[in-house]
Image (tube, rainbow, N blue to C red; front, side, top):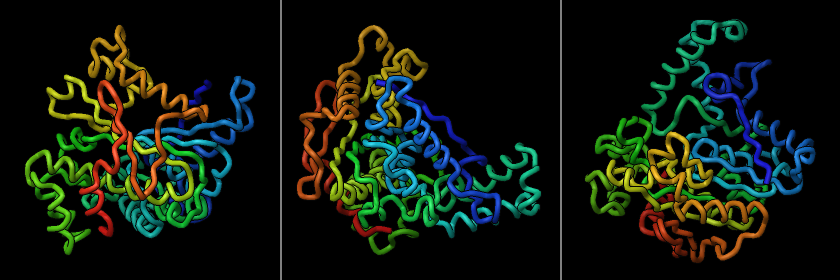
Length: 359
């Protein structure tokens, strides 16, 4: 297998939306870079022993969000044959109107016009973008950085595109970790409701009439466990369930929930937190994070890592077996545990159901 690691523009130079400022400013720069990379793979990968007719695109967190955006982008259609999205954060994709408002505020902070913007020092641009990021974080969960829908490159939000059937209907693996928000909760970020005040504020703005119904799905509320579950579902769980429901009507879809946790994460009270599955997919047990998660991983690779990497590789080769497809009748989900995997029908049914219809 040939793996291509894509570098694309980030921050104010790639993830900050200035497309409405006029000529010379394009939207979704980071997504455009990814599409350019996939075009390069199509045209050149055979020279490296790869097969341009068998390309799998995969990513985690912001990378997974980009994967789902690629599925919904007409410009990316036909550039890949399979997709894997690990813990996508779909609420970070905002509509064009919100991004245009943010770009106007950005210009206000800088005190310049569009033409002057192009010659400003990068430090000044980053400082203004950082200030806008802090302001935007108060409007949970919209951030100043992120992808934009409602433009030619990404006409619809990926979930709406899936519901409308206007996606690249390729086989998909998609899933989340059981304790996505636990690591973020340490810093109490305003864009992720993991505090009592944050949860109440979120429900007041997004579903005041649904408050009691939603919180009934978190019987431990307001204990920490319930707050973590609520924040996890707002950013990761509920949007992923909604996307899987819509997408599975058009293409083979495999859904997972990653439950494996190490003793180090247990001691820290984090559980299967956001990103903790990466070292197992990549077998990067010798990295700094890998050594922290699995001190003995370089000598004895955990079975969960062997299973996950084999499954991801088999999927990329179109040889996946023993993983039933997801549909809205049964919602079969692979629950990935430390020593074995188990297929469970709708394992988060109670929480999934309460988020239906909440804006």
